[in-house]
Length: 252
Image (cartoon, rainbow, N blue to C red; front, top):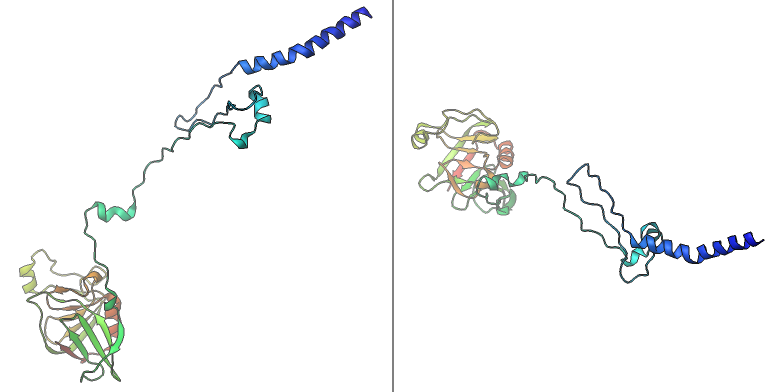
């Protein structure tokens, strides 16, 4: 009986003093974790630490279980930006090359039906050089109007012609006069998207002038050609399908 009493007394002493002492010892030591970094550039994982205004729960696993994390009890190390390579923006290539910005197409040069009070017969093409418009007379006081590019100063002209031929995706052979001014031009170019005559051409009489498309639609509404009348490809295709060889063309 005496031995049992002594054993119970020893157990009570351990329960009274041992557990708090063990808790205090747990709180007094900090074991630094060893970080193994397979990829040195990856951000360090966040480290949780007890805040100063909370009761000491002993740290470690007990703190993790019973800590009040939603109230900001833990501080987190700042994250590091990812070291992703900067990829070039494809749309920025023209700017990097120093290419000047092309002007936007003015909506007033879109194809549209307008009032017409002139005396020309239905099917006649009227070219208003100063205002950069081409009209196709429709009758009943109406006309289809298209925006055009016209000759540069010194290359404009006026008169009456007829459409003598029509060609789809025409070849281009610069005349001798043009080659004299621009010897860098090709002597001949097959028809296609890169051809300066564009998708369609309507030849005016026996002259070197044409109504034709263009691979430079931003030049519509300007004085740009050597006397030809240029249109956007979609507009010249539309006009080409509406007129016939022999149609009257009045250039003013």
